[in-house]
Structures are given as C-alpha cells and as structure tokens.
Length: 69
Image 1 (cartoon, one colour):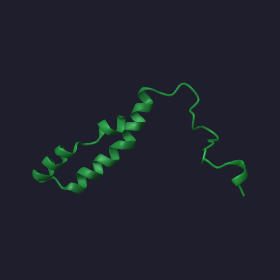
Image 2 (cartoon, one colour; image 1 turned 30 degrees about the vertical axis):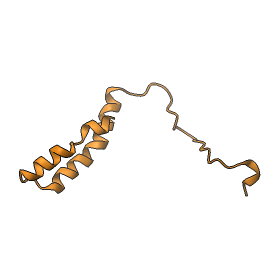
Image 3 (cartoon, rainbow, N blue to C red; image 1 turned 90 degrees about the vertical axis):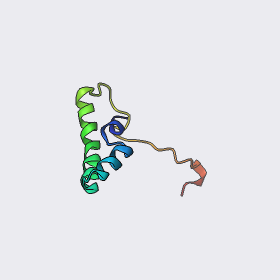
Image 4 (cartoon, one colour; image 1 turned 60 degrees about the horizontal axis):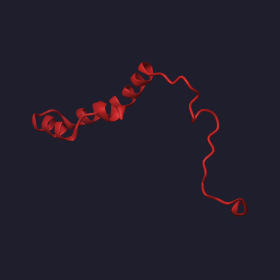
C-alpha cells in the first residue's frame, strides 16, 4: 500500500506525457520511488517483533510424505 501511494497515477502519467515530459523519465522515477517508499516507511514505523520471514521459512507445497523422493 505504501508503494502504491508513492508512484504516479496512470491518468497523471498520461497528462504529463501529453505535456511533453519524456515517458522514460516518468516511468523510471515511478519505479525508483517504490524501494524508497519502503525504506522510509521502515524508518518511520520500524518492526519491533521478530519478522516471520527471518531465518528459515517452511513453505507448504502440498506434497504428502509418501510422494517425496
């Protein structure tokens, strides 16, 4: 949600392109703002607990024990 609010809306993107702004610059700045917004949100509201994805993550692939090689 944070990253979605940091990028440019499609209608505004088209309006800027129609005004003569190069589309490559707009798309580049929009993509670059995604990791920046995540890092700013982590600084403003840091995680205090241990993250779920820290260490070993066990993914249930739906395999049964007898189907494993």
